[in-house]
Length: 280
Image (tube, rainbow, N blue to C red; front, side, top):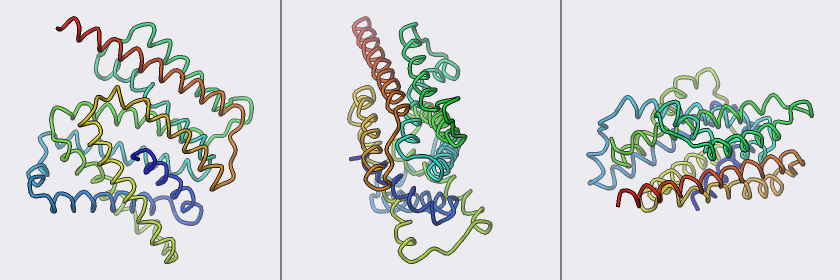
């Protein structure tokens, strides 16, 4: 359900961004998300103390990263095929492995490095350098890298703040910063588009809340494989809504990225079990 909400949000934005300025869509996506979060906090008294963060600086950096990765993704929707962009962003879990070494000092064995390498080969195939490379693909690549850093920041906050605190601050920077930019980009939409523009924030806010609830009730390693279902949804919706059919480069590259992602996930699961047995 969560991933379907995210893909539905992206599908709607890809349609809206053809007629409306991307910064306006980005602002409304975060503004509505922030309103949803505030409404939940106000409606549930036991959540109100969690508005205060013990790691405010990190929360704001994390929120700024989400704004940045959303911005690159939304601009990518303006130029790229829907499935191509979504598949490129699925390289983020592989980038998390690399960044966990650089930023967190974690150790990664040769087998996981091999998996990451295969995944990056898949990304190169999707980019198809020398065979019709699209410069706009860099939006998808940038979105994946920034989202990977965002995930690292989310991991670092898990022991510092309550999940509702993190949810509350998720949209804060995007809503405030993009509001300041609105005088330069605002174009009054049609009534139909104005109503549709509210949906990405509702879908995104609800999706993030469900995602937080899912991680609170299950291990991240168990949920990871489900994230690759967005490739199926994106391919189907890209074909049904926009008439886009991925080329052979996309299919081959997607296969390599998904296979590498599953292999890295499998290795991490095995290592977690081995550590658990040693600890026991």
